[in-house]
Length: 408
Image (tube, rainbow, N blue to C red):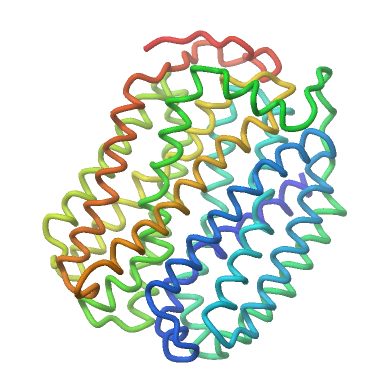
């Protein structure tokens, strides 16, 4: 239990490191000349480095277990990333720091999901994952108005130095407290396991949905909320922190609400589909009229965070199609899709904004929200044809789930 607590704290830091740039937009612009393109690149590189590391993490979890894999990668990556960020003098240094953060954070959630999948029944996977994600999303809360207040009081360099120390101590706790679950009896070593998973037709629609459904929430909360509020409403750091705080709290609530719904309604597919259909409606509303006023925009951001937090149920949907000996690689493959999609969309939306004659205009933000809506709509169209998982047997164990009962 103590080991899971240490992993949960590391996941709070992981959520913080992926989302805090929005709040630091004014300081980084004034102190080191970072513009929207720089911040978009830095935010995107976090997701890309995180995503590419999933293949290393998956093999590490199956071969070496979560304790060593997570403690070493998180300790080295997150600590060094915070130190590079704290001493940055140019936008390039921020990009390097975010790359190191992405590498360091890459095993944290997957280690927890690996333990859940090996030790607990499949029917509990969604609620346990959603609860962990809800707790970890406290990192989004800390990276909102509390971060803005700390930066105003102590300076952003001092705050990042303190976070380097905290990251190192959490890595030590993981190494000391986490206990590896027993290894699966069947071995499929190395990257060959990923090829086996890619032959599963049932996973493809889930992977495409995973690729694109997290991108709007991650992109808007982690990056675009700050420039949007600054450009259209002349918001300062505290106001940006307050709005992103509300969105972060909504993401926590959303994860907790999503968690038990699959057991309540005996479906995963339609819970995910319905929630993300609402996200699509919110994006279209923002694209139709981005100048709604701060209060209306905040309410839409809250709805986006609340309904866009389907990650736990989506991972459970994919988990139900994984054989026990490929759980580590399976969950990291799905997580790769989630993070890689968010990273690619960060790069793409950054380019979309840079192509505009006036990237600070309402029309530019209309195009930004419409771009997210287009890709999410395409993902929903594919996911509509995904196989569902029936959840009638609440006592079914994870070890028994090799050929789940499926239906449309």
